[in-house]
Image (cartoon, rainbow, N blue to C red; front, side, top):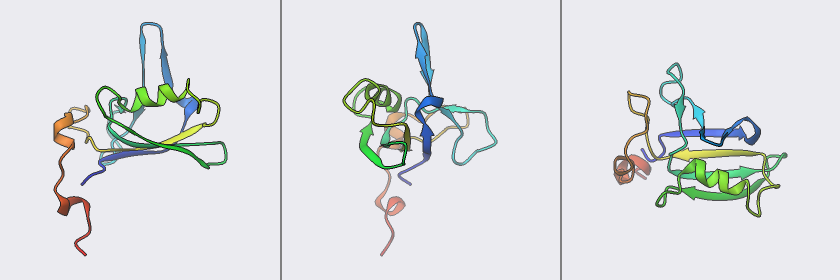
Length: 121
């Protein structure tokens, strides 16, 4: 499986972006364990989509190259040329959630087998 977790149409205004000496977070629930404790997806790697108030796609991006994880990429878009254009976002992450409630290591997510992600047609 390539996509292990996702978040659909999260409101930008509902995210705790942090403040001096307090990190922000992207808390949600594992797609496979909805009744678990919240998971912080801030370090997720994958792709994300920014939407305007009418759910029109504004931008599609990726997170995970170097230190550019999901939270950082979204936070950058709060200050760049897209800052005033988006109010919601969706994300699709390649890192799974471990039993501990933490995200899997980078290297565990990066190499799924072709048969796990593509239909056998």
